[in-house]
Image: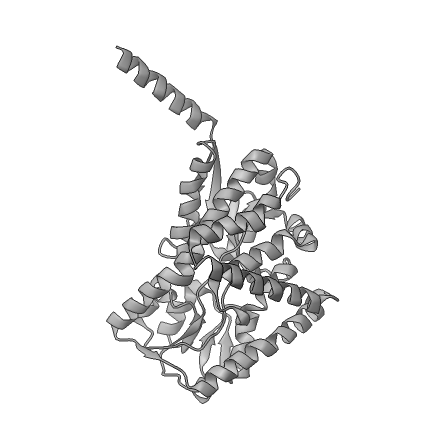
Length: 371
């Protein structure tokens, strides 16, 4: 009898907790195979109830409901309460994040780039004003692995790039392609497979993980590991302000805590683990791995360094940032800082998440942040 009574009390408590829970509508904007779905939003849905004692839960809306291109409308219409927003899709609306994204070619260490982006955004007043005007609150970034050339033709030298039509994920990658004589194509990542299969493009400047996420392993014949930088200009967890304002300061902190942990897990997956799996899949598929010649690598590194000045100039002309050079220098300084921290942490995701909390999130007043 006591056992039955205990069970009834336990079930009643669980029902009460479930009834009191605030379920957030969250959207990764990508298919289940992509790490932003499997290791970012699925992880948030898993971690959020843990850190909030069941008070906060999440329902994932798939890309068939809201894709990356519709995320702005999804958030602003409240269809989505927490969404994966890529600022390079909306540069005019998010110039500060776009400025950091313009520095994509400098990325060499995914965890450091993600952390630098996060600290840059959280501690930048004009960045925060920008997000508020957009109607959202920012809860951190992630990063891809270092991009490579995924092509249907072998590329060993700079000369081999000339004339290739390459899918570009943003302005800095387009600048790189044009500098080396290729033709950039601004095609959504989800359309890469179709475009390549139809011969519209010859390849993609992308994460090697796209071989798995978007089935490019079926089409790509060559991978050239010339360093193209990282895709780190992300707002992984972008909270619609109506939803953010409906949460208490403690609930906001819990959401930020869950987001921080999920961001690092995501970067570990996208920037490291998935890259290793994709390489193994490429080997199995008979794709040729090409080490570019030294002159090509040196030329790519030199262009990436010179492109920092271009990024500042573009940001000044396009967005009116008179202090664009100082902003670029500040971001570059944060990259150096986090390169050191990641090295100290030995690349351990748990240690990196802890340092992010110490360096960034522990200093945030959640009663006023995003308000």
